[in-house]
Length: 146
Image (cartoon, rainbow, N blue to C red; front, side, top):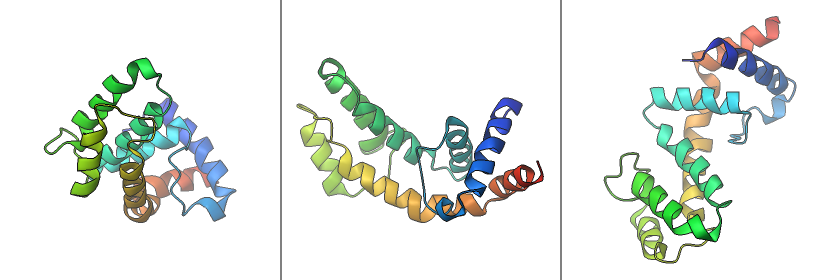
């Protein structure tokens, strides 16, 4: 649930998004922190927050140095990619196996295919439902009234 500080931040985000209605239907994981928190809360109610968390972990991974690359790649694999991972994402076995094979010498883009698949799932499935959710609609209404 959003605390007062996140709700006011989200209200500002909602106002900005209302002024950009053309962009409202497009999933944008680069939303402000408040927007990400609200979307993550929504995904949690649908038992699919691992999608956003994986996407964000991949974005952070691209910024890692070569010294931490292997450790970070293995953590992402263990947490999200491997079969029976605690937050296993829904990807095909070919993509999963390709990532596993690249773990010994990971490179900054080794999760790109899986990340694109997850992005597509969120863009076409979760995010449109989020935009229609009572939580999002109530906050948009609140933003319009202010």
